[in-house]
Length: 235
Picture 1 (cartoon, rainbow, N blue to C red):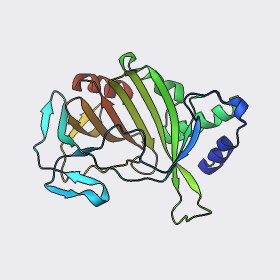
Picture 2: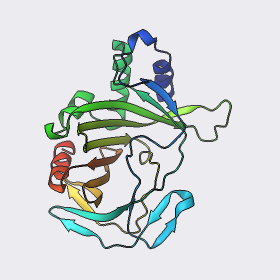
Picture 3: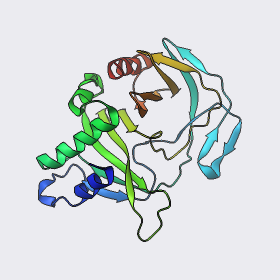
Picture 4: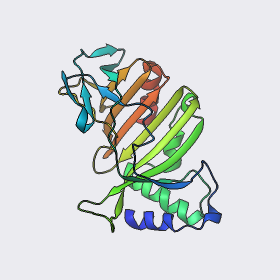
């Protein structure tokens, strides 16, 4: 099934098949993505480009254990993104759920239940599973069409402990801010090359795994715990 067909079918689901997970189970938003609690920018270049949502400040990279961490700073810089967010955390029809998980497997190369089974228990808790659709190239109002871009899995183990995994097949997952780093140090976990950015208790990991692009963000976890997550996920 084509991704646009999947989105169309999900949007046409009767409300009686959806259980409320939040105020709106399926919603459209034209603002910054909710998956990023704060704007976190890699601090590798001494240049600020606020108008384009980029902020970089010169720092040295830091290493801790097996993961090489590129230092970052918190910044209040965000871009306004035009996306449609569709939540799958509610109760769907069996056919609709099968379509979603089949599309997820085609993007990640991993069955959905296998994927979530790889997440260590200390990261699990309140859970949201949703997708983000972006306008097709050249699409204009009022007949703008959207195509599936990211699958996102979001966990909250505690108020100050969060994990977000965004996955896209064709390109890096969407962000409402950019990470500007000219030559970041690279790490490796289970033969997968990745880039790690960090500041205090916040870490961002970017990599390509089994042909899909990953953007993983954690808050409230140590670097050792992040390494545990990656070791389990990138098997």
